[in-house]
Each structure stands twice: as C-alpha cells, then as structure tokens.
Length: 119
Image 1 (cartoon, rainbow, N blue to C red):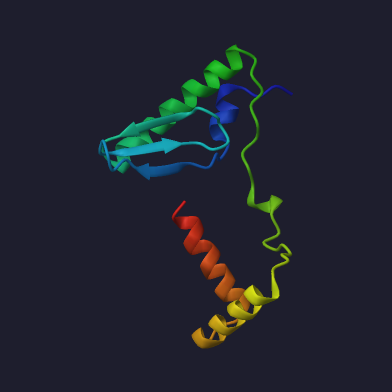
Image 2 (image 1 turned 120 degrees about the vertical axis):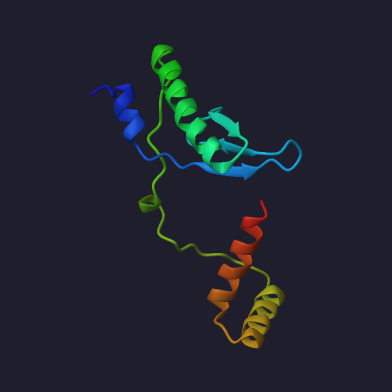
C-alpha cells in the first residue's frame, strides 16, 4: 500500500537540533531524510520550520518517486554489543571504574556517552 503525505507526516522521524555558533540560531535536520534541514533564530522557530521542511521534503520525494525510508526505531537495537580490546586497556578501564566506585560497564557507558555527545 502506498503511503500518502499525511501518512508520512504522522510517522515519528528523529529530529536533530544543533546550535549554529557562527551564524546564530539553530539548525534542524532529520537523519532519516537525507538533505531535509532548516533553521530558525530560536529553537521554537527552528522546530516550527522543521515541520514545513519535512512536509516539502516528502512532497518532493513523492512527486519524484524517491524511496522514503521508515523512521529508525530503537526496537532495532538491543543495547548490547561485544567488544575486544587490548588487555592493557581492559586493565586501565577496570582500575578507573574501581576508583570511581562503579562497574566497568557503567564506566564504559559514561565514556561512550561523553564522547558521543561531543560529536
């Protein structure tokens, strides 16, 4: 069954908002919709503009018969993965987590989230 513009607008596509420190304001994009982005002077304006940008993106994709992917879902991820590392790094992580009084798993999640937030 072919989806309509309204069907796509009802789907929950992830929105990313980034402050534009050079020009001012905020830039909004949708990672699952390549090239769909907009901006605004305030977060509220940027989010409002994002709805219009998403609608225009869907309209163009439908008209040009471009495949529109469903939004990414967290249910596609288990929250677990296995990693191999040098023994020296394993020791270092174990020592740091012990010093912090938390499990090595919690410490690694902290490090990964801290690094991920900066990128």
